Length: 269
Length: 102
Image (cartoon, rainbow over all chains, first blue to last red; front, top):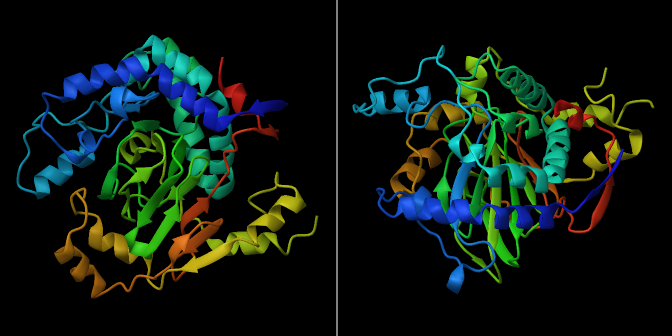
């Protein structure tokens, strides 16, 4: 099968489709407590082409503020305001952001991005790919879901979900949801021409222009984007939720090792 | 047997020509140190100083070419793939991912 792939423009178009949802979310966030995840936005005057905002999409995850690992962290901190926290037998939910007509249109417009992202995942993290695919197949069967939704038929990614981040800086952080062995797959798009992804644990600054992908062990390595210039910035961050895979009875992947790739060079074809 | 039996020979060669960075620490031990920490809101100098006692980070500097970074035991921590999503590239894609849907 040959597919014409226009990945960057596909994601840019998808971002414009989501703009009404983003605008609605930004209004809702105006009354919410300020955290680094809902601040740092910087769209051009008038909102530009993409506007600003950040939304998470998932075909099957635990309800927000009921994630078992968040609960464990709060217990360690001596504060647990969520007494009815998620248990591993609880149902998974299709995220509210994915239940909209614009989300369905977005998935259709960015189908080619999903396809190539799946291919990248299969190459750089084959076991994570296998477990991710197994998780999505289990979710689509429906028995682990609180209720099924037709949008699941359009979900072709092996990832548990993704965040769309429009015109926002990202402070240095680690992501809590994944297993340490899991990669997050970050995809830079938009129209900007200057941007860097900082990874201080490696003493590295990666040029992060549109079209760049970075598979990073984001549970372990700190990463962030301090600024960008020359246009509007889109980041699509794909993630796998360790608690979801645990709920579905799937193991964590083993670490991807460089020696496995070196061995490829000695193969006879 | 290769874990990538579907990968044709010419493409396997590509992996051997990437730039390689090495962190001289064990990522599992770094994770042991950081796993209970809160999500960071930008740099915390005190926390960084504490980690630097045990983990001497590499200084890979500015990177703009494809590369991978591994830890001292060969675990790959990061794949950097610039320009992999091309704006006007046509890809022949043999996978059957789309069979998952509909």
